[in-house]
Length: 266
Ligand code: E4P
Image 1 (spheres, rainbow, N blue to C red):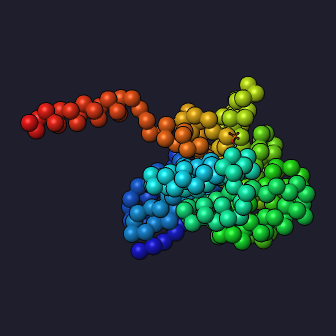
Image 2: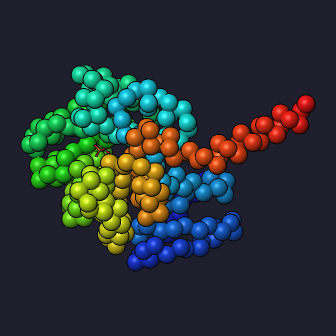
Image 3: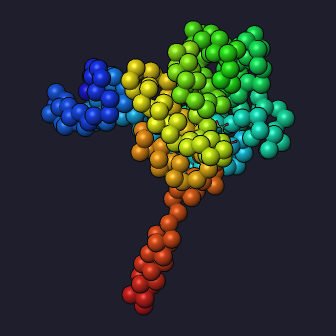
């Protein structure tokens, strides 16, 4: 049996809500939005939309393939610097390759800075694959272009966000994703995570649909804090994704278990 249910919860902010489905299974949801869509399939709730999503922040195809093989990858972000680092001259071909590996959102950044140019480039990029999100710089021309893309049903990712006011305008323009760059703020002695807290609160206050993607991640604590604050997505360099799973006590413990098992065998 499949059914869906809207729960309207105006102004509940971050409170937990306990809700009983008609089949009497208790559900606890940490609400971030004024409303939430709960979908049930045979009494199992599908909460994928409300889970922290992990994207890889790279244009390196081998890294994307390997991260995808871990089974935890939800999407990919790239930018012109990451493309240049890998020496990808034919970016269209690179996006085609990436979209063959990953079915989730793949951000493809425009390099135009005027409205007409951004719209033209974005429309072309959006034709590459259905999972392309057009990545647009958070400037006035970008706002105008994102509004047009939203009207045309083209999904977008606003990049280079450094203030809560930019994030509000991005949401009002209809951006699908906002990318606050926390590492670059930390680099200039400003607390990047504070920006995420502010955007999460503001979007929660008004129920903006725009997803908050934590970008410019430098280390595992950025990921942990993003989860604690309740961001929607974290885009992470490949070396940091691998760090997320590492712990010396896990390695030492495993070594001891295997040694004891071997001793016991014979
Ligand atoms: C991703 O969308 C951003 O372009 C990227 O995270 C920026 O990271 P950096 O600040 O390490 O260049």
